Amino acid sequence: MDVTNLSEALDLGSRALAVIVSAVGLIVAVSQWTRPALLARREKWLREAMASETNTARRDTLAGMLTDTTAQLVAGVHVPGWRFIVLVALMLFGPVQAFGMAKGDASVWGVVLAVFLSFVITANPMRMAIRMLAERYRVAHEYRTGQAINPPRVGILNLTEGGSRREFTFAYLIALAVNVLAASVSLFVAGQTLWGLVLGLTAVASGVVLAGLVNRYAASRVGIYGPWSVEDPKM
Image (tube, rainbow, N blue to C red):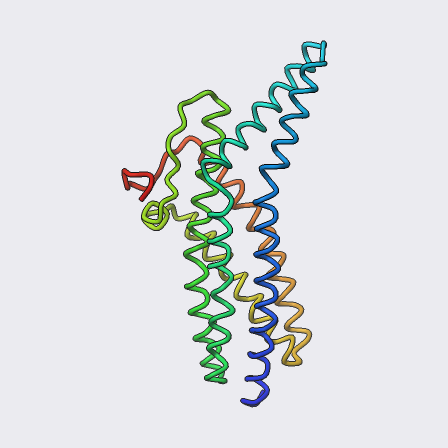
């Protein structure tokens, strides 16, 4: 592939990624902003159902569902959705910027450097998002079990320090998937349809699997208040 074709591919790829980032950001934003309303409607329905239910077993089932729904609402108040939206925007903004910069150095090494920088830019916000998700699960668990809720540690210092090996591993793998998707877009628009399609599908499938693993990991940390050590939860 000559320099002209590579430059055009990077240009088109960065534009396509801008659209992808906008779409993903919109989906995340809508899901996070509509989630409290959906949970509130579910809670109202459960309360009404309990009020009219006379069977003890069914009332107990509804009561458990109501507690779980309220726990999710409480967790959403303590760890609001806009915090995730900001981090997802930062995570996906990396590939767009990196591939855009690569247009000025339309060479193989320029692309390699762009992917590396994009990988680094993408991984850290992802790790912070995983930690916030764990905090949201912890708050919900503490409410559900009747414990005193520890203040969620979602300040910038709390999110950037320390971290478990699994957090880093998941963050780097997701960052890799995002950047492989970015590379696949550039390959696709450059005429390398087969490789672009293969890499794109691989990245999407990997992202879906990793999302499930991250969710299970965050849910498994409900009994841990930390491991970050900054005392002030606002920092």
